[in-house]
Image (cartoon, rainbow, N blue to C red; front, side, top):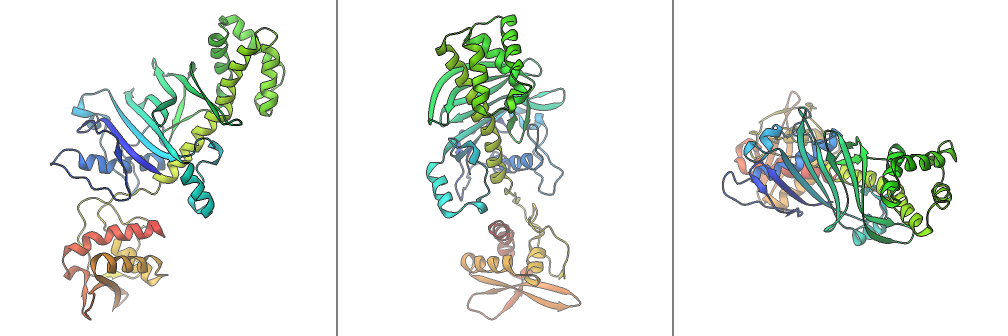
Length: 400
């Protein structure tokens, strides 16, 4: 789950600091201090996930769109060249292959185990504008406060992959390191690098041969050539065969300790980091895909609703304009959402809601105060209930 959010050089924020996201969060502050800018930003993250964005979607064509402005509108004081977004989620990265599973597929024991072993993991994204597009200037992944790895843009389009910690999944061990690998062009999708070992194998081997063994360019290329001769496509070999193939070639030339260090890095990239990027992307997709935004101004309620009037089944609208239509439609269908909303209304607002047929396929949403027998059209009971109703309707949709 998304646990915290931090905005740097965004709108009115030089640095918002890390803001914890609780089940219910209330923001209090002076006018134009950044409350709305912060509250709307999870919607920006959600539409970026929905669009499988290569960077970040400050605007989307979908009905749930948040129009957050252009790059120049977003950067602090409209004159910066970068802005940074940091998100913290909780998950168990020691099992990257188990990340991203839908909650509905988890049993109660799985959920309890997940919650017990979950730890904070942060994704830090710094954006810049280049040739009219918003791109990643830097992307980093942190385990608590320790940086695991990063991708940093060098020049116009080449990225350096820096590894700061190695993971040995079989023995549940970690090791601090400092390896910089120039990997060239890297694509991003939904806040994570699209990075597989197979696509970057030769660049990874080349850079590590030069840094760990101090090979020159021709020596590194010759070793890679010999490794590749061992198989048509060694990346398709099982992990043990792939590592064994490289070991046999390197131990002809170098000390076993050096070779072990080299293979630790290869193994960590191949079996841990490449899978971790995929798993964390799915974790974030699962949690952000359900984010919806309802603005501060509600549309006035309507007195009558036509039977089976068209509405989005999952979203009440940015102004709550579809809430009443959705409730009437659901009342005439299976009442699953309607009954939840009615129960919430009794608990929160001390009233019940109902639907009454007027005739000629028209219906009205009625409100009855607890302890009375008087039914009133929603339009006739003041704006308090109609302001809250879209929020609890959206909540009922998400729960259902």
